[in-house]
Length: 124
Ligand SMILES: [Zn+2]
Image (cartoon, rainbow, N blue to C red; front, side, top):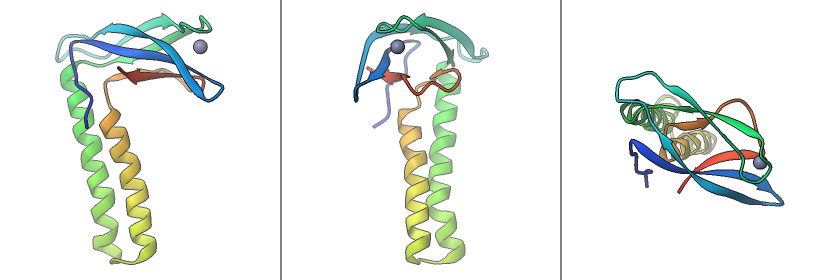
């Protein structure tokens, strides 16, 4: 199930510690449809580290979501069409296609900038 996209999007800024996410909700204002992505920042509610996010408009987020779904379906279908229905091909297709489908289902147009394994932005 896809995440509901709204102009004023509630998300959870989460801190990963001891196997659980702790965090707080954060209201993110998106740019107008058609406008470029913007940078927003907040502090982690647990460790107070400053966190920067890229925030996309609703239309751009829907486009990214559609592109991810298309890539997912292509990864499911193209290897089977090219190499047949063999166990390694099916496993590769399901693995890669499933990974991309998971990303598409969670695309909400608010992404943490940089590599930070301790923090995440999650749907409410
Ligand atoms: Zn933190």
